[in-house]
Length: 516
Image: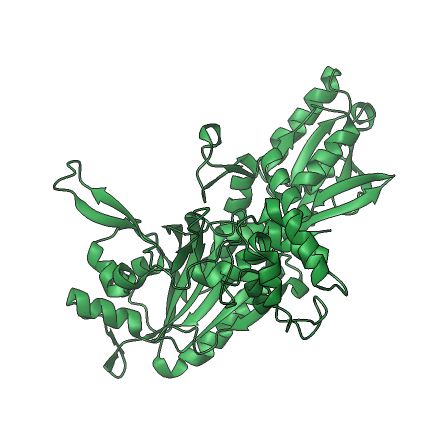
């Protein structure tokens, strides 16, 4: 299935079935912001519960925390966000579109004119095809591209690029750069939207969202909506030790909202301005930190696999030295192969002792750890696994989306794991006008919903009801029919196999407990 088609189907399914809605849609929406509908909020809750159980409840060395979104401004000075939390961006002078400088080529891959050009030039093509594209499709898709405005002049600069389009020797970025070459023949990065050459130098943009704390604007304190949850953990390090008497190694986990003034939010819920994080700060002795770093990488990767992500769609990407923060000893991303390419799901970093040292310096408080046996004082190293709730949900939905042909029709099924599926059971009466059937179905539903997320639906014919529940990932459909009134049995249908079992009502809970 083409990438664009798959994402279109995912977005459509999410809205149509109540997973995710555009924020403020009746007023035209708000860029980079999304609302979770009735099914989406259940999926989100299940995901966070699965993370919390794995990280906090099923371990002896991690505690939970829920820190404030608003924090004293000096927190962000100490962390470096106040002065250094920025992404250089460029703005097209013609169409006005903004692009992160480090993501321009990612945007190029989604560009309408670039994809049109690739389609036109696939195979053994010469410059006459470029000229034809420039005079036809190019005029409407990239009116400001040098190739479109002055095709003959531009083509004179690319005579040295005579390799087969898409061949092993063709440098894609150089070729596209020549499409936007200036009058001196210098390659320029063209705007992914309109083709105009983009500025060569970026402009710094602070990604922190500001607000005021206090009812009177003139005297209100300027604060920020936190860009990450990690700092709330660091500033509570001493409080947690004093309250719990914890010894190293131990971690503090938190799930919470964060906010970033992203220049180019996009790819549905992948990059947004309001998002939720799942973060752990794991404190360890400096000489043990590297082993814990490796252990957390393996453990976090396994968590995604255990919840059903296909192994071939996950990979580990260690950061190169030029990507690392100046204080970091190492960082590895867990990446998922989204329809738009490999992108980060979660990062695991060895942050050394930077954070506690910074907060100790700016606050004047002693944040060193004192070993209860040796009385030695030192700043612990920190291992930080940090993942996004919204990105994870998108990955699990994409991973679960399946289309298959059944009796000549396309069946869409969302094969979410039992832990994540927003609905576990649906009660479906075969005849909604039969009061006895309806009463029995509703009684069974009332009993089962005390244990599992269960719904009742009689809004369509049974075949359509099955398809509707398949599409949202409901694990089992239970049909109550005429025979159920006499033999006290119901039909239980499996979502993935569509296999049907006849089960007595009094054994139904035991049967489902074994499966769920």
